[in-house]
Length: 187
Ligand code: FNR
Image (cartoon, rainbow, N blue to C red; front, side):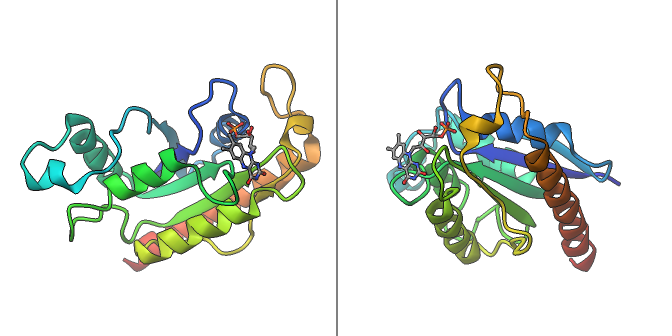
């Protein structure tokens, strides 16, 4: 049975390179993975008072339920100042609370970092690993995926034109597929 995978993109930009890469990966999803993009726009910045005072934003409720409904996650993110963009961190924080109700826990995941620069978003990739380790998420360790110089890999419509990157991402998603099923079978 296909596993439901939520794909979270750490950018809200219309012409986001990261979203372009995420779309390509969704397009090459193997039979075992039912992948779909998850919207993280419009979630109010986390403030515990909203939960404590019984005025949890509806968008948080919906997002927490949505996260709980997936079997695993793929994070495709740019790097901001050597870390992850706040919009992604906020989404992670929102669905990690209220205390004891972390809905990320136990769900097999993978990370693809994306950058127009030459370091491939290494800082964001590893900061995200640290956060997800604390959130008890079994994270694919190998292969790692750092998509660098991304602007040179895409055409004007944001389609991936670089064949070696396409073949790498194909191998990455195949390994991710095996990881998701391995962890799911063990649970
Ligand atoms: C960046 N950018 C960036 N790139 C990088 O490789 N390492 C970094 O630390 C940063 N820092 C950074 C901070 C801020 C606030 C912004 C807005 C941008 C550049 C970034 O990779 C570039 O804008 C990408 O195009 C963003 O990803 P999307 O929106 O194209 O997916």
